[in-house]
Image 1 (spheres, rainbow, N blue to C red):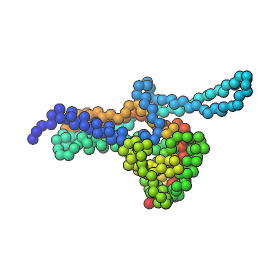
Image 2 (cartoon, rainbow, N blue to C red):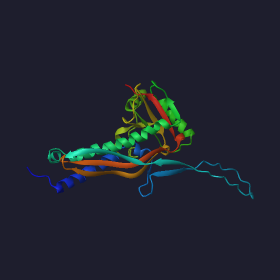
Image 3 (cartoon, rainbow, N blue to C red):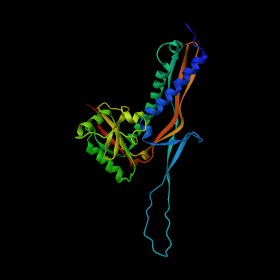
Amino acid sequence: MAATTSTTLDDLFVNIIAQARFTAEEQSLMMGLVTRYDIGADAGKTIQVPKYPAIAAADLTEGTDMSSTTVSTSSVTVTVGEVGAQVVLTDVAAMGAGNPAEELGTVLGNAIATKMDVDLIALFDGFSSGLGGAGTEITVADLFKAAATLRAAKVTGPMAAVVHPFQAYQLKANLTNTFANPNGGDAQNTAMVNAYVGTIAGIDVYESANITVDGSDDAKGAVFAPEALAIAMKRDFQIEPQRDASLRAFELNATAVYGVGELDDSFGVEMLFDSAL
């Protein structure tokens, strides 16, 4: 039997890392729907995002000086931390059949992407505005209500909804016509293409199994603008191998350093609805 050399393992690690990074970037749905700050070049573990209040313009009188408006800013602090996942690649597996580079890369990439989505989805529970209730099925009218709520809060740009797949089914069953197909503006990555449901009331609707269903078969989704939530990336996805000689294997340690936070509470609406078929 041919020996596995350090050269072939180095080649394998390169492929694992490439596949894992690609998977992590493509499979995260929420990353494309929120505001992202890349702070790798900044010192420290926090980012402070300033928030500027709205001011009002006034009529002017010819020849009369304008009066100034005091602008007092507040800020939102996002603190970053490490997340990680580890798998073991044994020497036998590295020499065996199949494609361990692609398979392990996909596993690790999915783990980090899922963690990012879960952390961002957990922020839905913090929105002050909410619609629905336990045991209530979601309808298209609820999306129109959410859209009206956000527009009244002066959201002028795009809006997205992320709901559980069972809630997405209820929306589809509630419609008398078909959903629109995703286009290039809606689908920025594989997760968006696969999770895209349609556009209702100006809201791009997505489904995600990363939304937790509670013991009463209810789940909390949300309708929000990108400015409602933020992710601060200190260090993007990376993998570091470590040899364990006694185990005859390599540990593959995937990590990322990031933080999530709510930027503007008025730019999001929690959607608590039944999530059972």
